[in-house]
Picture 1 (spheres, rainbow, N blue to C red):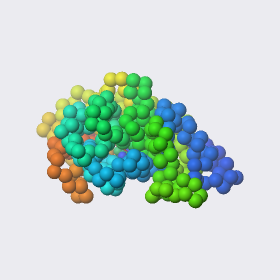
Picture 2: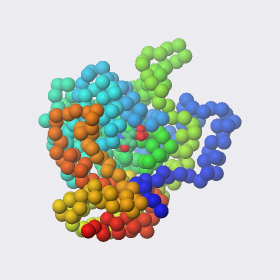
Picture 3: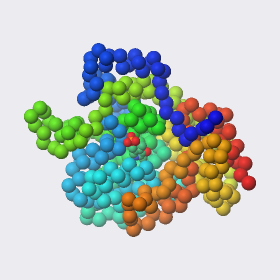
Picture 4: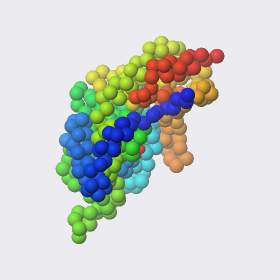
Length: 366
Ligand SMILES: *Cc1c(COP(=O)(O)O)cnc(C)c1O
C-alpha cells in the first residue's frame, strides 16, 4: 500500500452530517453565521488567544493581515525567511512589499535572530518569521529586535497549531499570527485559516477587509477582498477539534518511533526537541548529509518512491531560489538545508508498522 507524506484527519461521516444539519434549516451558508461563531470561540479557548478572525484559507489570512496593518502603502521592506512554503513570501509581495531574506539557524531551521539587524534599513516595516514544521522561532529575541526598531512582527504559524511555549499559546507572539487549517495541516477545516491577535482596531479591520471593505449597507471605506470562512468548513472544524488531542498524541507516537529508529545513524540529523515547548509534531523533517550517510537526499527520496513511499522535499528549492523571486542576499544555511532535507510521512493514522517500513527502506542504503 502507498504511504503518502500526509493524510487528512476526518471525523465520522455521521458526526459531520449532524453538524451541518442546522444549515439545511436556516439556509445560513456563510457570512459569519452561528457555526462560524461557535468554532471561533472554541478555537480561541483551545489556542488560548484573545481574538481570532477566521478565513477561507491561511494564505488570504496572511495577505489580509498585512494589508490591515497598513503596511501595503509604504512600499517598504519585510524581513522574512526563505525556508518556508511560497505562500509566506507571496503574501508579502502581493501587498506591494519587498521580501528581504534572512538566513535560518542550522539546528532548528527558523529565522536566525543574529542575522536580522544587518538587514534592517530605513525602509523596513515588518518581520515575518515562520514557525517552520511547528518549531517555535526565537520569539523573545525577535520581539526585542522589533521593539528596538519599531517594527511589526507577523508570525506565519501555519504549521504551529496547538504549540505552546511556557504554557502560552503560540498565537500570542508578535502583533499577529496566522494559522492554516488546510487539509494537510494538523487541524483542518478542509481549506481554512485564521489570524490570532489582540488589538481591537485590527479586529474591525480584518472583519471589513475579508468582506469587501463593507462597514455597513451604505458605507464601504476600504478596498477589501473576499476571504470569509463559510459554515460548512466551520462545521468540519468543530468535528475535527473534538479529536485534536488524540491526533496530536498519535503524531507524537509516530515521531517517537522515527526517533527510535533513526537517532544515532551517521549522516542523519533529526529535529531538535525544544525546551519549554509543547510540540504538535506537524512534520517529521530529516537532513541527510550525503557524504556521511553515503547517499544523497535525492537518492533516498527516489528509493522511498520506488517502494511506494512518498516523502516530500519541504522546503526545496528555498524561496529565494525560485524563478519568481530574485534576491541577491545569500542565505547559505537555507540553501544547504533545502538540499539535505526530506519530510517523512507524518499523520495521525500513521502506524508503527508504517514507520518501521519507511525506516527499513531508509536504512537499507547501499
Ligand atoms: C500551508 C501554508 C500556508 C498557506 O496556508 P493555506 O491555508 O494553504 O492557504 C502558509 N504558510 C505556510 C508555511 C504553510 O505551510
